[in-house]
Image (cartoon, helix red, strand yellow):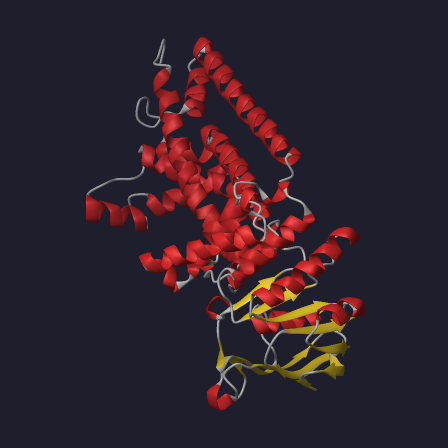
Length: 232
Length: 226
């Protein structure tokens, strides 16, 4: 397995069908497009370790996170995986202000305990907050900011820990049409600025056309059509 | 008791209820968490045991406790042999009685608060690298705060009013184990109407104020969207 490849093979029995996918990609954004209930979110949950597949393999940049092969079976805990997950409704912690939300994941990094590295991490967080124009929201509650701002904060929170893989679950579905257009542009800019391998799931084929480097369509747990990736 | 000290039972009740509330809080939060947020076996059995003091007559709870902490009870023997301490008929026994009788109220309140915390926040915390302990202290517990506050208020009120079990394990020794409810009982028995009226008034006013403040606070919390 190449050291800069994301590879997953997931088999999982769901209520009405079996999710059975295998895919690998090396760069950019993989878009998984499909109707609701086609198994998209289950894939993200299995990758992040929030859910366990019945069988398969998850390998991120040469590191095995999950393997059902009995000879070298393993299942790394969610907190050990360098995977960030942006949930559909962003899941910003309502009991913390924006700054604490963004710094939350940093505090779990082993590097954060080293004084000089901590300084670098905090500066990096400052840079990201300025870049996404959320710097002035630091002390605000997530309840008091707009939908577009929530998305920027959630993205900042997800990337500030420098993950190996970023998972985005319907990131634009909670936004109104005008904000959506603006956030598409921001996402395309984000792709240029940060070299983070990303899996984005959406039900919209227009969104998939606009944002994907590689993509596949999921129907009842099976890959129906793929472009740019080795997916079956 | 004629013209007896009014403040002793009040202060003792406050002390017993405060300590009992702390115990109920620790155990209530612990059990609410492991029963409702973790996968432990026999959940229903544990929960039933916790709720039992709510439905059993306090005298039954008092009797069971007496068997346990009394001179021939396992904890009674242990405390006597190890520390030379007798538990029964002390204010510590009253704390135990109040803690056990009020624990179901704490448990129920904390439980409903915890299960109403949207699991997506806990999942988000895990994906951001938190282990279960940090998830609990930074997300689950703070988001259950309103339920914990009502648990504390109701537990405290229940502990202040505890009579039956306390009477059985701690008795009614003025200045040592006599609380407001047992003092009222004794005052009525001995025809000290003035004392009984005063304590009843204090107890009722206190409980009224506590519940009123709690309700107002919870309403305010809800209007703020949480």
